Amino acid sequence: MERETGIGDPRGRPFVPRDQAEASLSKLAGREVKLPEQAVVSKGPTSCPACGSSAVAWAVTFEGLDRENADPLIWHETEWLADSFVCPDCNAGWIEPDDPEPINWVRPYRVGM
Image (tube, rainbow, N blue to C red; front, side):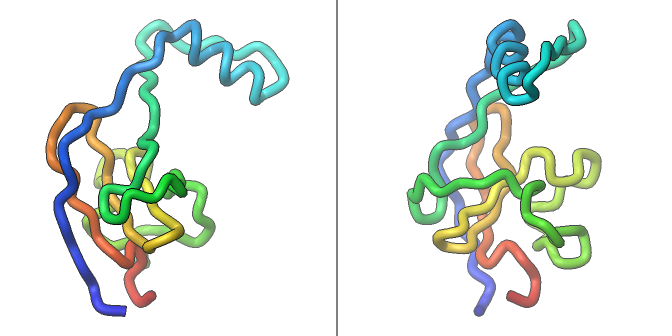
């Protein structure tokens, strides 16, 4: 598959109040979760900037995706893949910025796909 890049519309990620984040995480963990005072939580994207699909996944959950095989456009030097997302429908990957700024996407998100 040939590498393709594009730019998606700016959208920014909405922040989640700490108490709501703690409640959601506690439910998922099956025990009480308390976040540090300085913790900042934001929602992930709901659609792919390349194709519009709602099948968006957090890149960190894709087994075997690491620096050697992730396209440099979705690799954040200091945060690893924390802000990276992928679309299983069109194989696009991108870093989702917290602030409203254009989104650079690439497909395929893995080198050598």
